[in-house]
Length: 218
Image (cartoon, rainbow, N blue to C red; front, side, top):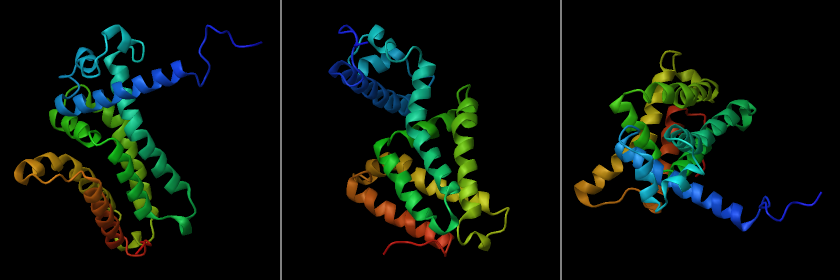
């Protein structure tokens, strides 16, 4: 049966416009949640940021909870998939440095995500526990598996490996959360492409130092 002319096709301009609008909403929500936290951000704030009416926003996200969940899924979901892929790969093909590089690429696209996580962590409140359970705990779980199975992991005692994971997390995420303060202090923008390239290389070197047998491109 031919598709109804009244319904948009799967790749119609109408559908593409809707997807673009949803991405704009997610970008605005990510920035506002990072700046003000979940409790301090309303759907009206998000709608105003993207110059939409509230009913139009509801067409894409039925509630603030749904919008918040979509922001986390968009940013953290790819990281979980990446870590799961590393854990499932044959040991001889695992490259922790390459994983770090790809995580940095994800955070380049979602630069407010580390600040969002930091804001909710420091503020506490009712959103923190679900976020930890649904997203942060799995990330640390996968990262722990990655550390345990990485070449060179034998240099660390089992009780030290979680601390190594935390250290790498802080170096990775802390770069993005500290960037605004650093710029306020001396006017230097850490989030330019050139600076992010340098930081990615530094992180690869850090991982290579922590796990000496991990291959690293020169």
